[in-house]
Length: 327
Image 1 (cartoon, rainbow, N blue to C red):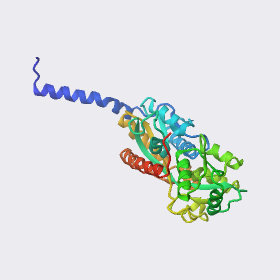
Image 2 (image 1 turned 90 degrees about the horizontal axis):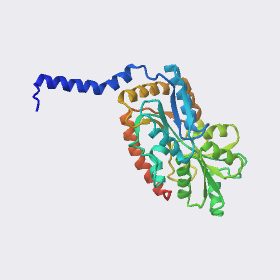
Image 3 (image 1 turned 30 degrees about the horizontal axis):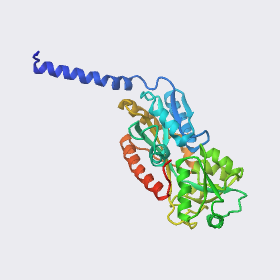
Image 4 (image 1 turned 60 degrees about the vertical axis):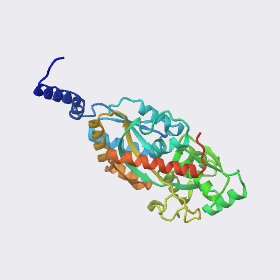
């Protein structure tokens, strides 16, 4: 067995450490990004997640002079998008613009996921938080949440609610549970698709995120009956909370966050974190937040990981309380 002196061992150890660190150093010094970045969105064009992703993408592109491509992979409650990012190269060029649907709720809504919401991703930062709003068609006979509840109780199983995300699904189920009503659930690939059918008269109501619902409310196509949060939303100041409207104990919100594939080098995670933090302060993202009733929210990767863990517990309890059986 060869014998090495202490200085030799120290030199070898130092060389090994430097070699291991080279990918991180080169990643930080290579001017990342050197080519277009793809933001993968779990929902359709026009959805809240899509709107935010495009605003962020424009801001990141301005910083880096590289294009940001928004890839909408709608369907399967965001699972298609999450799975594609989980399988992507961990090089920083594929970013999941995620929500509580993909990262906290799905594991409680489905018996088997094609991805692990924790092990398959590297958290980057929170992006925004927001509330939801119960809406009906502008020509609906229901002027208040109480009238909607009364109709649902009078006609068990006749009224229907649409959903295009886990948030809107659980929001509707919670409404049904807290009001003791029998209402049919009609699932959609994304909230914009569901709103189209709501406006067209195919379903009776839904509880989308404010980013998707507010433009239709302001445009006169939908009527707001209540917001999902415990406090009124400034953008809809004259709309009561659902708790105020008689659905006691109602409280729902949603969030957006950015994730990279697991095993992305820490230097790349740090660089994407820096780019996104700057992007959240941009005029485009501020405009998105102001116009949709959402609030900017950023975090360190570690804080996002802890937040996701607590949210998974919360959503698990809400889904169980709403009586939703995993599919």
